[in-house]
Image (cartoon, rainbow, N blue to C red; front, side, top):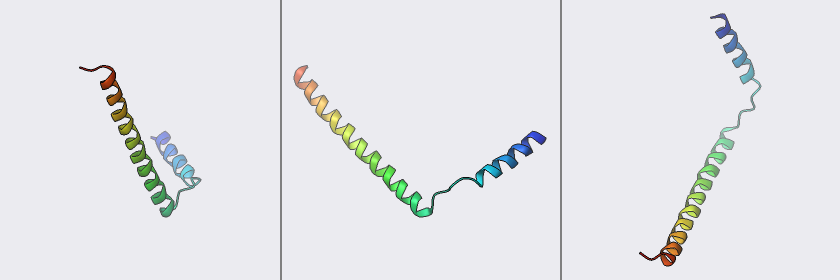
Length: 61
């Protein structure tokens, strides 16, 4: 039990050294991640459509 308490104390001490982002930074990073995810999805979806069409022309069923 003593090891666990020491662990919690050490963890609390380390969390004081963390440089936490501001609310504005968090919002900006969240929007950035969402935009990158959407752009990646559109790119991969478009690539899938193009490659499916190319393969459909090469290998007609």
